[in-house]
Image (cartoon, rainbow, N blue to C red; front, side, top):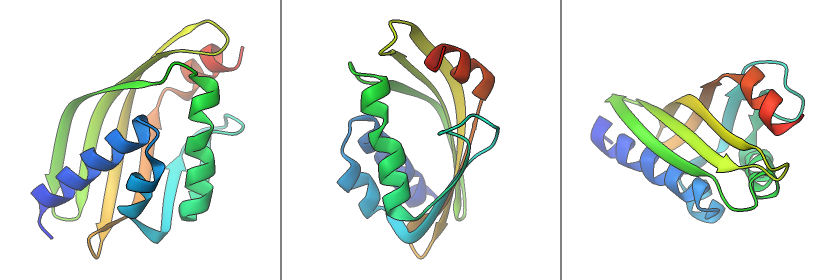
Length: 132
């Protein structure tokens, strides 16, 4: 699979997750997928391993953002088996606050499926808005 096809799949997967279509997103991931969120924010930071852990993590988004979370992909890059998406997530939080944060996601592909996801975000900003 080429870089452009991998980019298409990464964008499709992220879009599906943002719309709550987790089955569509999970279909693009390998069974042993991992998702790393650096930092020390409880319930957010750390490594999620496997589709079920990722599904559980993503299903919590609806509780935090009852009106949904909007993503604006600003840039996408692809080179071989690696795709990078730069984006902004926005939404009204269940606590009444407005959330806006810049993200960078690195998707690594293996055998046509997403094998690893690394998420880079200002976790301190997220913690202050989402959990205070």
